[in-house]
Image 1 (cartoon, rainbow, N blue to C red):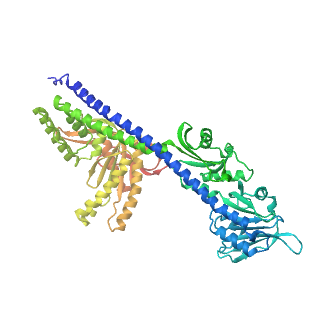
Image 2: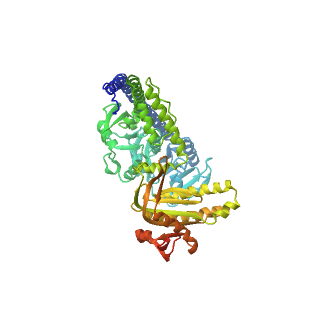
Length: 639
């Protein structure tokens, strides 16, 4: 009798109901998600623009602070009577004024005054730029270094002396006087200041002594012919500030001069290259191949004519930019602060929200699909749930499942039968190794089809004096030790592609090439035996250390034909192998006692894998219960 076919409308109805619910959910969810995404992206771009504007304002304020330290100090020195005459005249007063100005100005590298006769007084902070300390070899207790270049009364030569001062201004050490090689009158800062009564600037440039990026402010003294006061501003502090105040993880900030050449960059590595280049030439083009940067090049091309934000691309990726001219001081006229960042840095959170919204929508769609299937199931009396239960059962998933309840008695009976089968198989799996059954299924074996002849390699193991061990220890102790021992044996066999067919008391019956085919079954069996023998040495060492008996194990291996498969009664089957091959392997294990060996094999196994292992021939031997003698070989090691 053929099974009754389902109604022709059952399948299409389920499909139509599912599609209808999915389309309804998509029609509602996708427009809402898209609108939220668009609004989120616009909000992210607005927030990014605000962050960039804020950073540009803070950077401008930072510039103002840096220059705010230098300008009043230079102006003060330019009107102070103490600096009207060259050193050594009024040297204590000169030193005190310079120290007081430098002590409160962490962004200044040094303060100095040059004179028309070549005299020079210069104070540097050993804390603001620690390179000075290293270059001069200053002692640890020194905070400032004072250089005085003055004319010697005796011979009229210009001499230079470095003195090291503590925080209180007292001299803590000094270097020996040397002939002065520095002449302030030849320096651009001196010459430019003499040409104008206002403060002038020189740079940025790399200082000769400390190799730091600096900008010099200078101004001539109001009533002393030839006296010029100056201050070196450390621009590295601006670079450090830009590096630490990024608006996003991949943001970059840089400052361009009036010719769009690069002055400062937030990337410390690029700044190092910039310093090296500025040490060799006055101006460094942003197009210089040594500091070429795709972001700088693209941003320069897209810079707006005035202050504001702009959009550009780098290698096809959209970027946001913010340009802010530095206008608070005429000394920096034409300089522009540029802040750039990939648009994705700001929209990533919005993209994540979009992904989450899509996930939620996907979940809603999944719920809708499930609801559609459930509704269709109620209408069409589908057997989908029972089919899924059967599939889970075939995968050995025994989780509890609620019985399928319908208005059809036969389906209810089938649901109850599947539940009973699940419980029965779960209980059966407690007594039969699950992996063996899984391998049988994997190899497409049929437990009802009997057995078949095939080539296999069989291994038997046995523990020496196990009867004595059992006599001297309680059953609980023996079972505990055997469980650990069998776990070790099982892992070793499975690791080498074999299967344990049966535990026989303290013995193990393992087989290769069945149920899963293994072309190198003899080799894998040999490797397994050698590895297990080595592992048992460590196992027995642990046994001895804990006062337990050693499980000295002997192995017997043989390859040949055997009948392999499910054998037994109609209602009671067992998966095993039978034949002379199995018997010989069992006898080989016992023969170990006569020869004092550990792993005994036959010629049949040796011939299959001789090239990979070392065997020791022991001659022919009469195995118990067997008419034909067996040629014995001890498996010694791998080659």
